[in-house]
Image 1 (cartoon, rainbow, N blue to C red):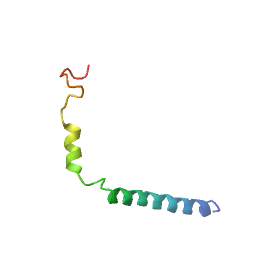
Image 2: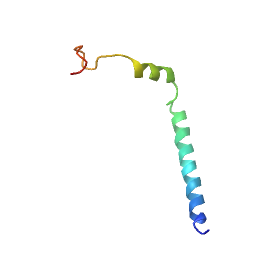
Image 3: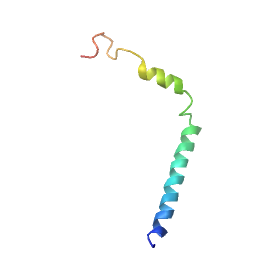
Length: 55
């Protein structure tokens, strides 16, 4: 039972830390262009530019 004295504040602190990180990411525009990120992930570009697939 004594361990709850430590675990409850730690759990609340970690929850608040996660919430603060999420709010920071919203404020700094991390979720503004979700469609662009999805298209960049499947876009077929040659990275090295010579057309051989990077080998």
